[in-house]
Image (cartoon, rainbow, N blue to C red; front, side, top):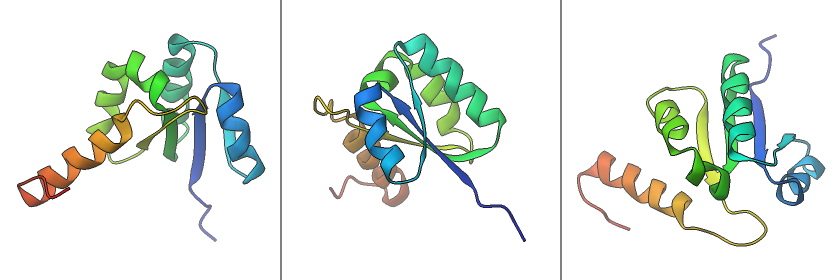
Length: 105
């Protein structure tokens, strides 16, 4: 039987604990450097999907961009419990525009 793909959630403790209740693996971080280290580690461990809070992603844009060029892990930006920076929505809009040639959103 093929093992299930792993999913991880990276961000501040208050935000990621909600995902732990849903059964996902969570990785609370206190700094962008810690977030970058965890993302690189989980990528090496073949995690299929990483949910990263926008606040962490904003500070490590270079790392996020590097993984956008890879198939795995898929990095999905999510707001933290303090609100959104609209980075996740911007990422979706960019991908739709790339796929269809115009921004239909």
